[in-house]
Image: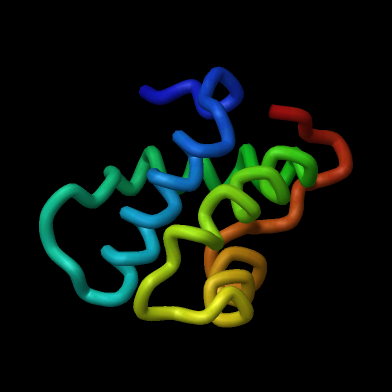
Length: 87
């Protein structure tokens, strides 16, 4: 399994782009459900990593606005980190 804490923001942005595309119906190189859960948990517990990955992802957005991508990331993808959990 991918250790997201070891990836750069650009690498995480690439994974986010693949996950977003899969959510929008694209087929192909979609991460596994376990990878999706692990990344959502990681970003939910590490706001600085989420912000850096989003910043790296924005210039790569093509068919979606930054606002739409941020809504997906914050509302549909990332779950809030439980107070007693650190990933």
